[in-house]
Image (tube, rainbow, N blue to C red; front, side, top):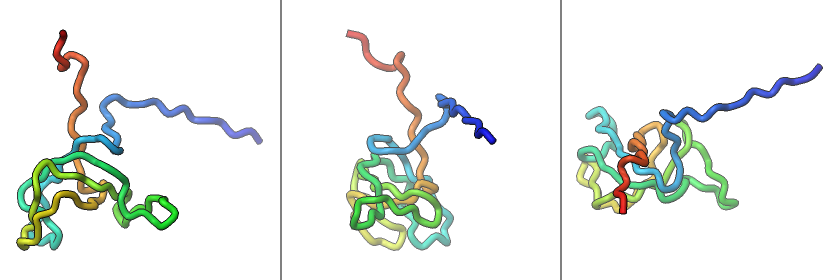
Length: 106
């Protein structure tokens, strides 16, 4: 029996995560123990929760990323300031990509 290949088509509206992607952390429910104060923004600088061999270990809610914040951030319980943190992808929202029309022309 022959297996068929499925071709994956990149959806330009799909915002993948990875190093260099600008993100923000939406405000969590008040009962969330590790909630951030406000909605921090930053950029993904590396994969998080790496094993000694360098492989990324997905958490219970998917991949984990290290986000470097635009400004030091605090947890709702007062812990901080944090310049970066490991955050599950499920808690991140990718910023809209910049279109070619947005770049200044020289």
